[in-house]
Length: 333
Ligand SMILES: [Zn+2]
Ligand SMILES: [Zn+2]
Image (tube, rainbow, N blue to C red; front, side, top):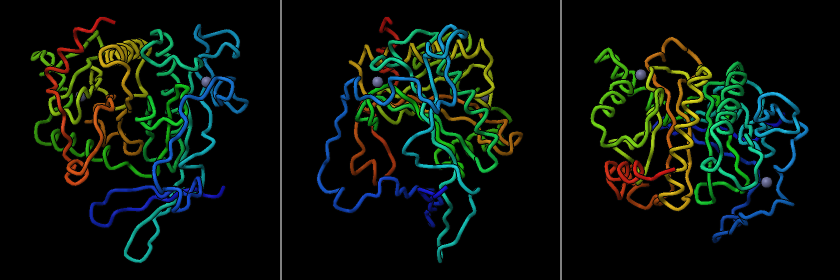
């Protein structure tokens, strides 16, 4: 298959970027602000019927007919990364680049408008199961270094299709943000012989000020160093590096915590656009990453990156996480 993108490494920072030629854009396409129509009606929606090439489809009751599907996973028609030859690291003079080999899938829930905040626990749990099951298959790809799972809600969060859907992208490198998170966790472990996230979860449980919600297995907090207003993180209370290894009981706890968190921001902040994504251990060297503690991060679109943020990498949160947590804790959902 013809490759549609390449990853280039910044020679100074070591960070990777993707150069995608997917839509064969020309420079004049970038002139001005092109408004994308976001409120597609149901009749032109590409996600209304079960796709013929669906990679999986799960009905809510766990059995029964496929036509009663609640969640399906399909190949992305406009992938950023596509299956191809295993990434080889090439030189371009002084620079390094690699082919955008991997995979790009879309996780679709059946209802055209009903987002996570209005789903049932069972429905959210099925989505989590679809994430896990696809992850487990995709990580077997020998080119894969990382599987990124994320969800864009609303146009400001980057969604181009209104119908609720998440995405799964298989990458041939460990992405920079994940790499930094792994490195920080590893250094803390080397110094203290403890998982930094376990220490944080325990401290937050005692402190209570930043806890938004907790059940037996998961805790939802506003992080101490929140990067943006109303940023939320969901952690399993028990140490685990690999999100895909959740058992049924853990998945139920996770689904409930995710639904509650998203329902609270939808209700409390009047349905803001948001992104959420998973941070889990990279695929290779499983033993080496056992210090890591997987989690999910929710970032409501409460501000845009301006000159200061872009220039410094320092984000400004306009509400203290303690106040954000207190506000969200009180929202009844
Ligand atoms: Zn639709
Ligand atoms: Zn831990």
